Amino acid sequence: MTMNKPRIRCAIYTRKSSDEGLDQDFNSLDAQHEACAAYIASQRHEGWVPDKTRYDDGGISGGTLERPAMQRLLADIDAGRIQMIVVYKIDRLTRSLADFAKLVERFDAAGCSFVSVTQAFNTASSMGRLTLNVLLSFAQFEREVTAERIRDKIAASKKKGLWMGGVPPLGYDPHPDPKTRGLVVSQNEAKTVAAIFLLYVQLGCLNAVMRKTIEMGLRSKRHHFKSGRTQGGNSFSRGQIYALLRNPIYIGKIRHKANVWDGQHEAIIDVELWDRVQARLQVASARPRSQVGSASSPSKIGAAPLTGKLRDETGDRLTPTHTKRHGRRLRYYVSNRLISGGTDPSGWRLPAVALEQAVANIIAQHLSDLARGHRICVEPDVQSGAAILNKAQDLTQRLRKGTPGLLANITLGGQLAKGRIVLELNAKELATELGLKTDEIDPSALQIQAPFALRRRGVEGKIVAGDHVPDPDRPMLRALARAHIWTADLRRGKSLSDIAAATSHSESYVRTRAQLAFLAPKIQKAILVGSQPPELTLEKIIRKPIPLDWDMQARIYGFSQDLNHP
Image (cartoon, rainbow, N blue to C red; front, side):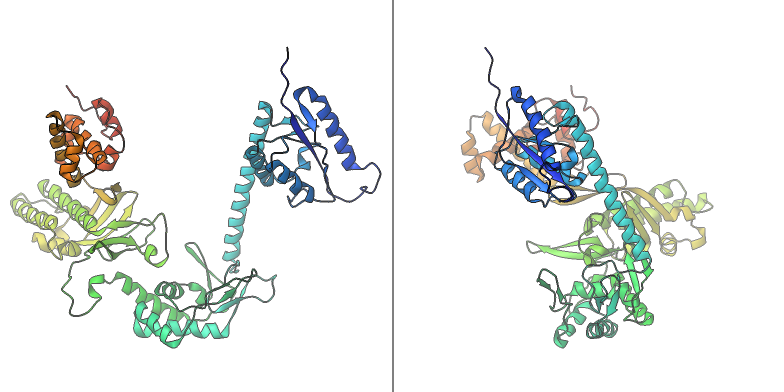
């Protein structure tokens, strides 16, 4: 007894790029259809049946999917009417590998396969799917090569000073000849640009310039898109003014990433005015935020001691900023481009207090090690070594305590990179602190390189720098203490609901945190002294049930070595 095969409804798709010969009684489309129909007949034992609808595209290129018959076929596939597409050759479907990948994805979503009758290609078989994967790999390769070619073309064009399209900046319009990639000056808008540059030279403050532009009624560029949508024509924001003042296009340049090339368009601002504005912007970015504000505000000397000192791996300056959360003022050091240019995954955003303490600890540890080894001076002196050691120890203690002004004075500069920080000390300040002459200090003592990383601990970022000093996690300590109290209550017969009611917590809250009492003894000891892995958080522990196997706990919670439990 044989089982009936499921019916597979087959659609025949034919296409011809040119109109030539289509008026004949038996044309190319008919020949393709006949060959495909014969193939379907040969597969009748597999349950294949032909669909009565013909899908013929005559005189249409395979470089596009906007074909009447193709669109009707796709609609029928999406409706579930077709389970198999039969074509004479693969290129009858499309000549674009990118479109081919889209078609296959759409076919798979609808549970449809396709077969070429003149090629060994059938996605219903394993060999066909292998061939399909090869073709899809080439499609991905084609997309990547195309993207690289476009990027290279844009870079080469900008190097020649050409405008590569998009919304033109305020002060310029696209060249009236659409074949010319260039910009022409818009006289009315150019006056606005010049006014903003002059205002900044006079006022030296972005906020003041912003308020003045609003008073003067100056507006951003209003752009009309071909779709009919309009954009701009509003008052200037502080960020827009900053971006305008930093755009080298106004002195006849074209920027491409980190490079600036001579443009083929006319400048609006002269170089002398541009240099004056850039110099004032640079001074403003290096000025501590504590110097900005009302005269009646409390003294904030040293509020951001690393202002103007550190740069990230791109050379961008770390700028102090702050935000308010739950009524608290939180300070940060961020890469300057995050303030002026929006988001950038490579930019740094570091909690200020933690960064300042980390830098102070690195410098303190460095000086302490050098003093104990008599390596601060070019020519160590045994007689003066003890005095230098005492002064160095006093200096390191004051650094760690955060003595106002000390960190700012002794830090000359530094740079952050992935996994490390490089610092340079102020030789004159260090010599004064240690009672030495500047030329007596070994130049190598002024250079420091130490490990540096920012790791997440709950919602906060934790800096791990230099030799890691144990730092107990207070919320985790409180949770561990409560876990032992609640576990003891449970052992005495107190119910979970009673504990929850007495503590004003939910039962699930008590249950998830009580399991902390079952952590391995040495893991609990590490939490008590703060030597647990920096990335280990309370949330990470309570997210899943704690395993009873102590060695497994060590592995999943990031303890790199065996805890050697008894």
